[in-house]
Length: 376
Length: 179
Image (tube, rainbow over all chains, first blue to last red):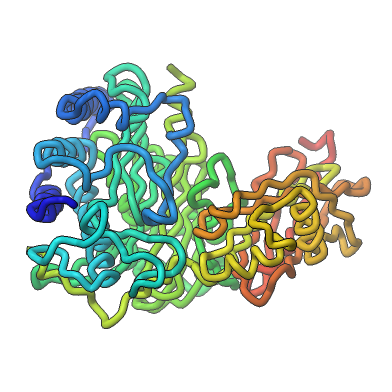
């Protein structure tokens, strides 16, 4: 059985994530400064990744590292432990020093907003764990059973038992390195768990976060007296955009059928569906700005040094980008939307209500850095 | 500190991971001379036993080759494919089945691919109609046309029923000289 202080360490992980914003940088103003910014960010991320590895013994490093061209690259899911088996370093198995190193790595790999989003998603899963087990998430008694906190009771033993032994909570997030951290050779940082898959592929001074899956359940919860909505800005900006369209634009944007889930979620690598909805070339300049601002909610999860150039690429292809909507247009309703362009797919898919959201971010030309690694 | 966390609302739907539905995602690829259909069927945990009882007919805990073949035939019966209003015969060309354990945990996806040969179509407008009627009692559906690889094919519209059980794809075949 794990010692009691462990839960406190786990919670400090979340709090540190919230406090550190070292990954944020100003958007570069020229290609040269962009390139310099990307190179500097790459160096910081590689250094932080190596620092994580330095905290591990040989067995830990073996557990954390995978070949770049092996199957681990595409092994990610939105499912919780018990339904999906993840490889890599389990946060619940790490020491305080190791968790601190992971926290630092995430703080340089992601933007400040991205870090907050990841933090809020992880914390939401802790809320889910509490609701599932009925145990308080911190300061409460240690969890019973092998593995300690976060373990749902076995089937038939109470709430949350529907077949598999599903486990929620902050301990159930995993870090993996696919390829060796390098400022020149391609490698990938994977951080994920229930409702979260961050796949950050680095190749020299280039980086892509496609494909990644930020999701949320609950989509709204209270923490220290404030309401936390991990994907609240995505939701609100989308509703603002759909309501900024005129009748003719809406008629094109709104799909007359139900979309129950992501069309290009986990396991759908390499597929491109026919785009639908309203072409962004039919938007006014103000509406286009709103659409780009919405897109940035996903792109901006990664370090600003990489998000800036990526947004420039998406903006350039905006005329060939489509915005599609399914569902009511009153904020507070459950509505699906998709943004699809030549190098972009974003889907936002509420799951039978507004409190459980799946989303996906892809680049059909550059998932897992395919474009970067081909060019190297 | 996190004792301050309280879920908004009185109940969180822990079963909301599509555990009680059978997600069936169809993707259609249109070529000049054929239609390729792929269906991915993922039973949620709560319906896995019902699907397994259809699959593992002798209840021996394994899905034999014969049982797989029978299940593919069953799905095929529920699939309708037409071009320009004329029925197409879809032949299952490949299928993969997860093991029983994966199906029981809701992680397993059954994948079936079909191919249907198209008659020689003139250049101009055509429609493909698809309907999936398999296990309507427990299913939710997705249906999408894949972006055509062949530049002689241009999809002009997709129309669906409200639940995406039916998909009509309008497309144009460009003549070989008009590219």
